[in-house]
Image (cartoon, rainbow, N blue to C red; front, side):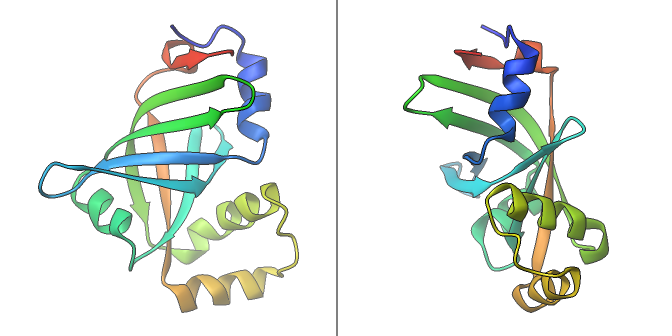
Length: 141
């Protein structure tokens, strides 16, 4: 069942919540992790570090399934997508700032954010859905 109300979807994705990113490990087992995300211009943006398993997983295999859930409201979407790993800090900085602001972390200047990204070896995962939102598996939207 696809998304019936695109305005409700946009409001749902604008709320501070986690996206569960599901990729495949080398041995074929799924790897699922909760992540802050930013939905902007038809793509999801997630920040991670080069030390995390998802960096290696998505560098080797760009396939991902994304689950965004609201357990208390019985709403969710499931999206098949692909990941592009952007290592350029200047390209990812605005998205990093946007996802932190979405989740209530406004305290850093751009220079502080850039320094944090460099120190933590942060990259930006750009997640592009394989289909339009009307085709996403959903409940309550």
